[in-house]
Image (cartoon, rainbow, N blue to C red; front, side, top):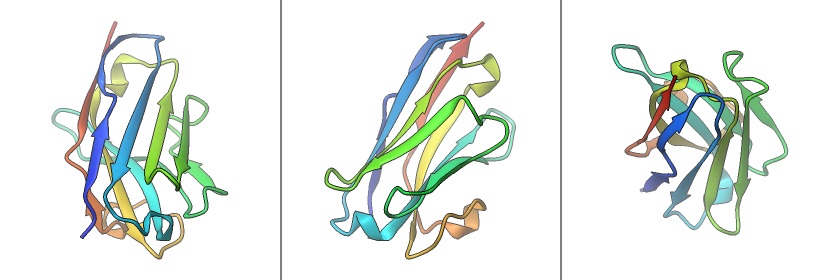
Length: 124
């Protein structure tokens, strides 16, 4: 069982930046494709970005492409989401997720483990 703990959320003004972190308890972290999702109030959870097991490949949703960067440090069992030029519509709870022994995948059902989420609020 993998436990994922997100951190780094908070309140930021539009145009600002945040760096989210997700620490995994599992020592075989490098066997997991990692993803970030978000859920805004009253909306469905949506894919944000994902990174391959080695970190060599990444993929981001069109809505955030060019504004976010996903990275990972397998030695620290941690995945990061760097978000820039934040907009009020980026306000959501951000979740990290882990997909064991899979290629980069975007649907929620492709992920096996989920964190509890961290709130990101962007003020206008």
